[in-house]
Image 1 (tube, helix red, strand yellow):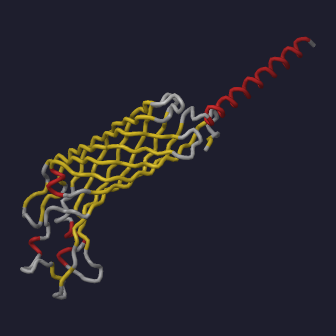
Image 2: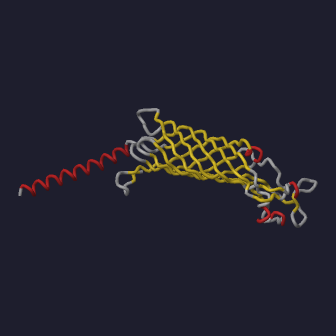
Length: 256
């Protein structure tokens, strides 16, 4: 009988300890502690440097990234960005323009053809947040560094109602100056994750260093190969809205 009572007593203690641990974990989440999964939506602007500046002007970016944010403020994440801009510094269609400076459609009229910048970047990063206040240890100076792939080209944007046979889908590849390769990224800024979880964002300066190659074997306008090695630099800012998911001890328990 005593053994049964002892077993029941120990079992009750174990249940109580388990409940305390789970309650402590929920309290940590409510106090902005513990591990966090961050779903981030970013927007920013960039100014080009090196070879990128000879081809494009300033551009904007929109992106999504996912961070795993540990209880001791280390960050591991992946990021994807879409780059877009209106300023193209080289006229890759100069050989198709008439004396008036227009590209002619097959029907003899003028075709409104625009040149635009388009690009993609995919990368993984690691980093850390350095708190600047004891009242909120999850907010402070955010530092990250990463590596991945950068891809960019000149988009030839023509009128769908006007047909230019020299700018069909296959022919555009001879003018788009497609380039891709390794990119290194760095970010420094401020990250804020509110204790009440209502206002969560980061803002800061971001740098890209791209080590790319031209990917077209022949450019129609220059009559030369487009396989040159490039150094593509981008300097800019990024503002990110963050959706934090506080992860409890139980993998099925996520506190919003």
